[in-house]
Image 1 (cartoon, helix red, strand yellow):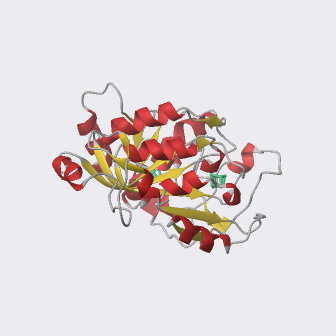
Image 2 (tube, helix red, strand yellow; image 1 turned 45 degrees about the vertical axis):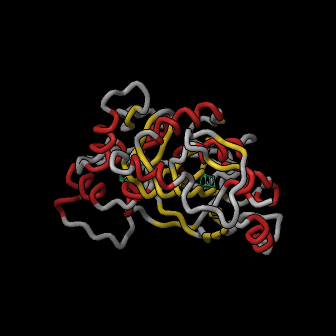
Image 3 (cartoon, protein in one colour; image 1 turned 90 degrees about the vertical axis):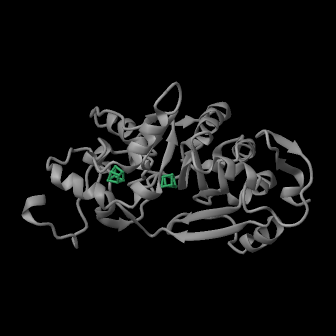
Length: 311
Ligand code: SF4
Ligand code: SF4
């Protein structure tokens, strides 16, 4: 059975059992639905949703602060409440289902099905470290359009990557394997004291344009901002959270527009090197006891040459 034979999106945003013949549609919702609201919805290229906040790896410099913040499994109902609210405000080209490691969530297929039912996005991607890919359920592959695998150099994968050819054809899903041999360090626990430097980092940050995130009932410009206040608590630093409240917020549209387009740096930007953190070879710390000082601060890319006014 083709994945699109099993469910289709009904015009009232519910899931309706039914049959669509031929290839899967490009959009999750009927075209008329998108067009009706297109002018009043914020249009984004991508939105990240963290479905788990724990991981079977512990990469040094993880953007999502895995190993630093407390582990959290996010309830299906909480994810759906946020995504339904977001769907009233925005339309996105791609939803990225991310973690932690999303394949650790026992209700992942239900989460994917329910996100699809909101018609918030044209496509759904699953981002995984691939450790559990051989255990992925058919239902999960039925609901996603693509899978991005972050492949790390010293991690043992107990499955053969030729499996991806089989899955791609069997489930009509694309796969992209990213070799993540290096990480860029951008998380700081010491505040950057020069406001002009923070302004430069924010103004030149691609993550601010491409990594919008929903987390704990809030919308964030970037993933660093989504995790900053929790991450910094581990270093006993308190900052104002940058997120825009999704619920019970009468000025949500204006606040999201302003959050997205303002050239004023976020609170999180004072603790982040943005695009310019130094690269280092990937390290998995799963087998090590966690040493917070080793997770603290790193420097700029040595090839970034700053004028004195920014130092
Ligand atoms: S695989 Fe590594 S970078 Fe990705 S969420 Fe897990 S710890 Fe973080
Ligand atoms: S916190 Fe600021 S500098 Fe860091 S990724 Fe987000 S927008 Fe960029």
